[in-house]
Image 1 (spheres, one colour):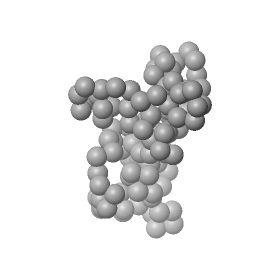
Image 2: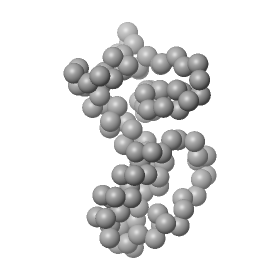
Image 3: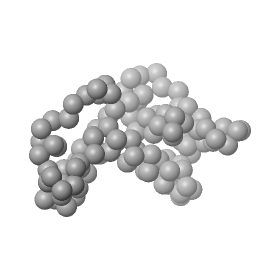
Length: 104
């Protein structure tokens, strides 16, 4: 049951989730009904860790098409924020990933 959850449900949730829920957001009962042996992590933690992992892989791979979006500043510790004029772009993967990388 846990393996099915991680393979199917968790992958769908993390690929299409945007971080718009508030920190006190309570997950749906569908996520909490998994096996009692292995508790499922909260959705926002899954989203953050998955986004950071994907962003690090993109930033480390110079052949990736989105590699040019992940530019380090002169300090070498933070990434350059992407300017966006619309909220649709602001809530897309790259600006959200850069924000998470800079805040972690």
